[in-house]
Image (cartoon, rainbow, N blue to C red; front, side, top):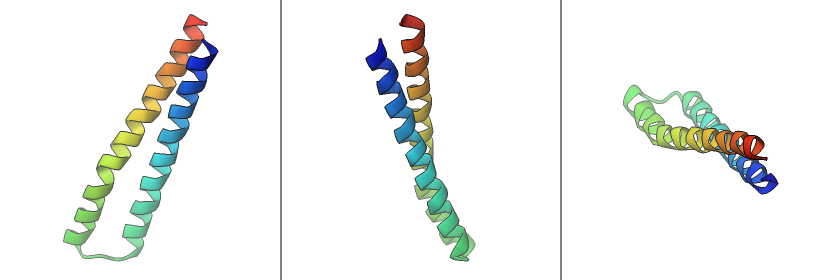
Length: 71
């Protein structure tokens, strides 16, 4: 079950990288001082990336917990 733990850890790391990427993109959008419509458009593009990264991270943590319980 050690492999399951490592796979889950890798998934969590990938999710955290995605969350960090979305944070950087939002910070860049805020620094650009865009009009409201353009800001909403940029944030609308970042939102699916953020939610997907969060999902991958949570699934990775669940996989780690499963590997620990089964191992």
